[in-house]
Length: 243
Image 1 (cartoon, rainbow, N blue to C red):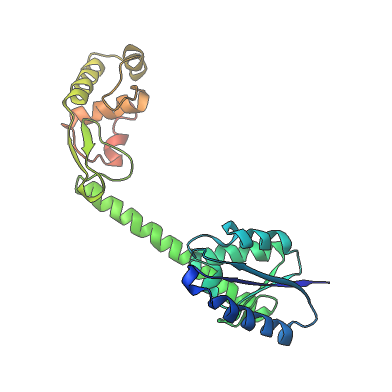
Image 2: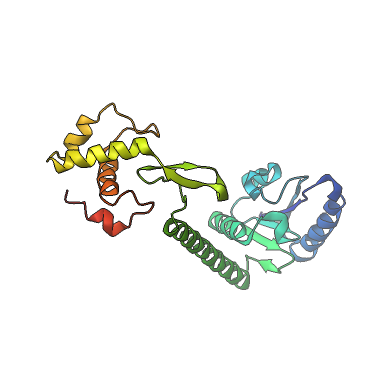
């Protein structure tokens, strides 16, 4: 026989009364709508932030273990289970794959029905769209920083060093690395291959502590030839592919 579980959560001890309100609502729904199912009990995460994913919470983990294919989960509000629509969509997809049905009473969501599954599919689509928008916004922000010569990502241009953190971070010239890069460019101009240069530099470390390798040697040659720009385009990098 399939089983139905009730679930609830609150964030702080000051919200203790909310457990009773959630439990009454959930169990009333189960009695009226799912009387044919065995009741597996009420699982409640007390003083647990909604920022923590459902299955990383103490009772959430129990829920994942207990719920088997064909079982149902019921909660009063979507925000009691999930930290965001994106988080909710991914968790619903996991439960659907396991064959577990979900009822969120605030949305009238019931994934055991065709309409409920349709709503879930729409939620997944919007969540994926939000992820793509977030990715685009991140790339645009990084691109703007790169064009402005500001620190972005984890990379530091050859011949520069980063000082400061966050919004206060900026690049300043690194004279030691610049002298190394100029020497590398001179070795290349004299006919040494990149592999020969790497061999020659073995044991010599950059100011950041890393050793010179084929890719950093290639970038050093380009940086020295362009007088150490803060940003290098992909086309400029490709110009040295054959060197």
